Image 1: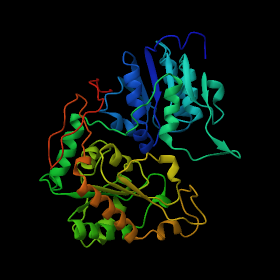
Image 2: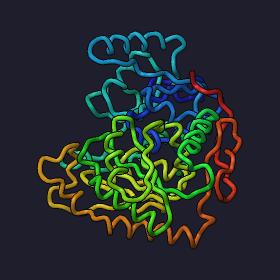
Image 3: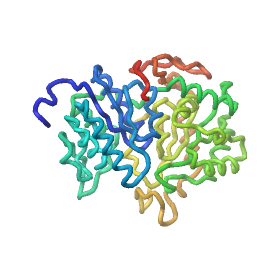
Length: 393
């Protein structure tokens, strides 16, 4: 790194956030630690527009810049022009939680004095501080994402001592979530389970819709939990198929649907989350919700958090984990995972919940530090290191 760069605390910090929803949630312990460690710094996030709602309410940043939209050469030219505009005043420090060549090029063109990230995707020459991911026989070794991010923070003297996932909720997100609860008749304290059957990665990550429908019915029969099916707008048809196949009164949240902001409220109030290996899975950990995660073609190690109230289900098959978004054969990793296996996990989690109700602690906070209103039976929320910070524009 340039001489003298690390001699004094940075005044202006740029953090390039991950592109995947789940990875952003996994990064939240690092984001909170950076805020605490660089308390006097002005922290700016560079992010995809669709992940803005995830970090809003956390109180960990002062401003946000969105990657230019669109594609092709026009987008790249707009990106380079944006980087040039950010040269004055320069960032003292840029932390890259992404692995792309493009993100390193951006921080290099923006002339950040110190640029910290992993040397991969042929971008090492643009970094002042190069970390090296674990590889074996030329292949990346599946490694949990959170410790991977923590190493970046450690490089700049920031220790991530509290590695629990956490999410803040803005007042606007709270209002939107409460509106959804009222619209779907869930505001009176009735217990429900969130069902998230989609996955942005690809169809190979998705468990069979007929089995999700069976889970909806058995949740109602065994626990009196109403199934509330949520997902992205492009997953609406899948959500409706599951609701139609369920014999119980499963709710399909499509009109209106959830956003990544309003989903925080629905997740916080849920008694259970059943989902594929998808981004909203980590909302369960952030709000301390018992979670059953169904894995197919992906390595569990990439997203492992040691969350004690999650049961991860995966059937070993000779062709996996293949990490493919679409299965070229018969999706056996998902077909061999039965409804009974999922329900056995649900029974284990909810039996533990009944024995230890004090474990169910709501850790959410508004961006101004206040607690959300009580809408169902809860223990008193515990405080996390949420900050009073202005919302990004």
